[in-house]
Length: 376
Ligand code: ADP
Ligand code: MG
Image 1 (cartoon, rainbow, N blue to C red):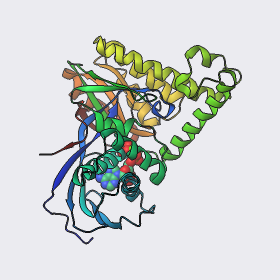
Image 2: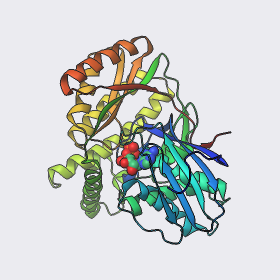
Image 3: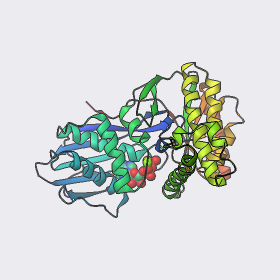
């Protein structure tokens, strides 16, 4: 690496991870989601280096960096470099103001745990460069170009939720986002005396990326069949519970399971938003359990470790609800736990999880936090 890790930055940007209370795999089906940024984040330090084209990036977590030239952007064989290259490529398609810079990336956000370190990486970089070079991009531009970067350079056909939550969140709120119109509502969240506790399974089965793209294709196949009878249907978002039932005999069982999960998950997001507004925490919790059932049995993106933790939590009256969050096959479960019982619950879950899988569980509390911002 041709620049020191420790330099005096011109700009420091904090880019948070996110959790999604409910609405899994609904974003790329143009449905509803209910995410918020969390306090765990990636810190970017930036400095212009007075060159036309040379950019030096260093990830402290990986203890490695790379140099690139802005006029020679191409996909790399190194996975994490593609998040960076993809974002730069999208920025260059939109503006000619970008010049050489140095950047270090330091993360407190576990990777591949369903907290969307990928979106935090993309959006933090785009947000920082927008400030540093006065690129004139809006927050929505940053969200959309980051999503595009993941499609084109990383190869994950992700929806818009992760980037939207990472950039647009407000402290103390969750976002009810309509992924079709991009209309959104900030909903204040008051769940005291309960807390949101994440349990990190510490597994991320490498099925995640390939299965993600498979699920997306299965949903599209489902839409193509439904469309023959209902031409107005453009995505699973446009399908109602009554409509989907008409296809129980005619759609292949797997496709039917996938589609009916998405249709019911969209309804659950809207019910959850209502329950939170009405402070009905019991209903909120039961919707989380219902969602996990669908994630596990219908959409089939859970794993034994996540199922174990969600089932385990059901023994505790102090836990209102739990589900696996994120794309699937591991990552974290979200648990709504009474504040007086958090320690006991975590302790017992840790012990049971260790016995079952010989893995040390990691637990942490999350709070709805602000989206990407400049550190003063
Ligand atoms: P998630 O978004 O749920 O954390 P993903 O698999 O979508 O999981 O993204 C994780 C990938 O993002 C990592 O494998 C790595 O390529 C990249 N990444 C995340 N954080 C960093 C970081 N601090 N430094 C370098 N690359 C990172
Ligand atoms: Mg990701």
